[in-house]
Length: 332
Image 1 (cartoon, one colour):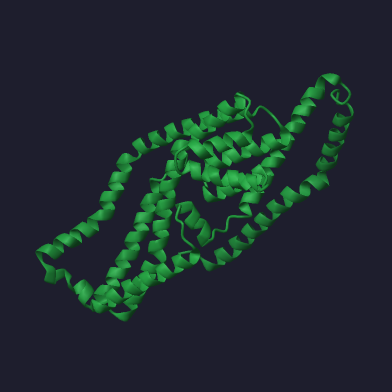
Image 2: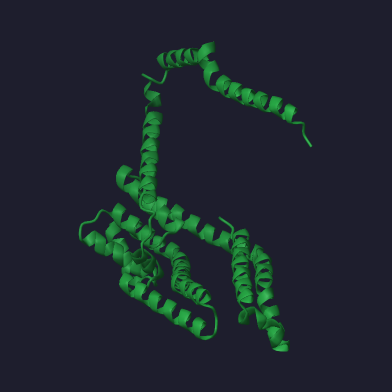
């Protein structure tokens, strides 16, 4: 289709143009003197800056200092959270609200894998099919259950968290210390907010700083709302400010986010129903064919090639479901 001689000529020319462009971007400022002239202009502007000795600019400078302190605090919190993103089974169980030890989880998963694999093997399937089904049941099913329970618990927490922040706002305005407001939440709010703040109060009682206690709370309840709350409290502890006003604004933001979530769910309801129908259609057709003509479709699990086809179809169906779930899962 293309002449090899032409390709051999065009390819080096393209490489030379790319190298020349990169060299122009990075080397030209040094050769043309733009870098030195820019530095000279910067020095002259700093020397002739009227705000250096003018008292009218002191408030602006203090505001910039406070802004830089807030930015440093945010960067420190972000770096601390990124350094602790590795999740253990214990943390996953805590997020799901399950009072289980990792040993109990591992033993239960192993028993589930053995039971499912034995049932598949006794039904007449091949040994590798039984091993694959047992591994999927022992590894995937418990993690799915834990993830489902964690998401359900997070939804309950989000629905009640704004009310808990309002308790802190009213308590701070009436003169109560922040620790006493947290104790009120730990005693009077609904689950799972109450249990999370009980953990925070217990950690404060043993001498842990409130920033670290809220960081542990965010690790157990990884929600943006909790992250906002921890950031506001940490900034107020380090640089001061009106805590009641900041938490009042945060409560309004959380309620607005809840309204936006409801709108997104309403707008995406049609897409979700379509995805559910498309995902359920192959399974429904398979059941209908099995009811009408069982001998026709029984070849899929009676023969080895049919079992391989079923496993391949299951993998492709799972990939399609994950893609559709990603398409209808909107960030807000």
